[in-house]
Length: 209
Image 1: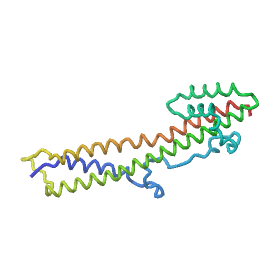
Image 2 (image 1 turned 30 degrees about the vertical axis):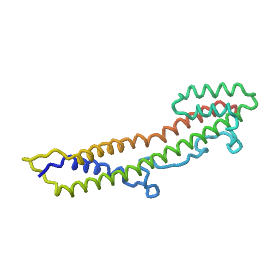
Image 3 (image 1 turned 180 degrees about the horizontal axis):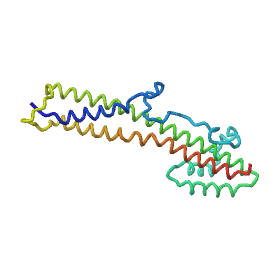
């Protein structure tokens, strides 16, 4: 008789992950976050300036496109990104500045919305992979149990785990660590939104009307 500690530990890991796989929104079964899934942002919820429809050609201005990239890149401090925008705007004729600022926000919103959508898609893809991995680990555990017979604890004859058990145990640990990272990933869309909101206020404040 053997003490199948690794298999039992993996089973506990998978059981502990069950709440993360609970479906909070039937329309989005692969969305693991407590935050409601909103795939696309609405510019009207962020921007109270001029309409953006006439500024969809923002990317044709190469200098402005470079500024927009800085504004949208999270690793670039907001202060540096805004400084780049200010330098660009000051170089424009005063009569054109409001239109240029509107175009800058149009580019920023389009870029950030695409980034955010990609992040959400990545979270769901990761969760689907975790679900499949959980099924695989569970089946591997069942297969090991079938090969070894019933799991019985014998205090007098503890047997070291087999290579298969060791492999399953460490695979379970990796699975658990990855699952623990999901709540952190779920905060990323909100972080992206916060930067966008702050920059929208800054850009709007630079406008004359």
